[in-house]
Image (cartoon, rainbow, N blue to C red; front, side, top):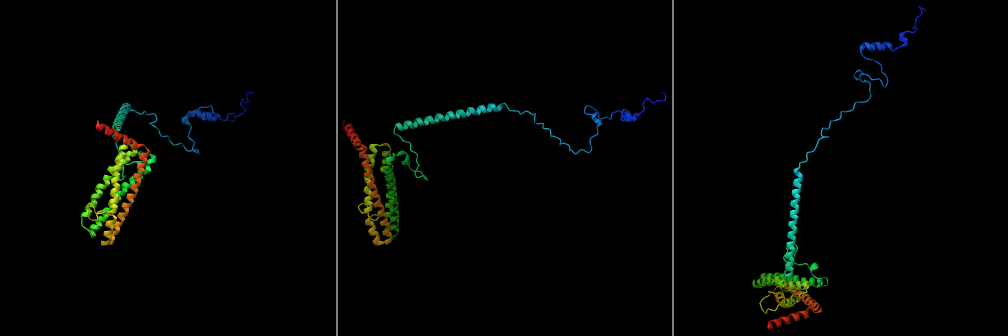
Length: 307
């Protein structure tokens, strides 16, 4: 048996990895893959040169992600300070509003009415608000009365135009000056003497204001009728566009006569509408009992004067 070989197979055939193990020991590291649970030196594995996957781009480092935000402590104090200032201003405005309301109430109790000028809208000169201050059942009558005041302004303005044409073609400057005087006294006078009293009478149902309106509105109607006739009783010449001056002017110049006839027609329309207004106001005045109240007030005033 001495000649018998105990290892009939060649060592390399029995263990084909023996040579590799010896080479691994000689080189100082192992070449075995070792399977999934075999750990090797990471630095000894060369990177795959034939990999098809592209490396991921480097992710930028966000240094501000964990940064803290400094909130100044003075901002809360400043906010509280501004809040206190706003409360103080609000309290001051409320105080002023209450004071203004107290003064308005005191003025209303004393009979003083604060009126804001709102008419005409492009250049306010007077206070006029029929829709909000006059009762609904009296608004139509008030509007017609207002149209008579505007109609008076139109009549007197046309009277200036006619007198200007007559001054240029027929007569002297005296009739033009008289026409100017009629306008600058008639329009403001009509508003103050009879239209404004009627407006306040309709708004407050004041018997005294109604009486003031009747007195001066009768004078207004008399002036319109006198102007429509145009009789030269007070001033000579054609200072008013009545029927008589229109006839005289037509004989002198046809164009001047036509202008005077237009003025005559305007004064006629103004007279008719004014007569209707005073009739309607008087009917309301009597129907509402203001006539009896006015008589009682007059009687009490006479008795106080006698005592």
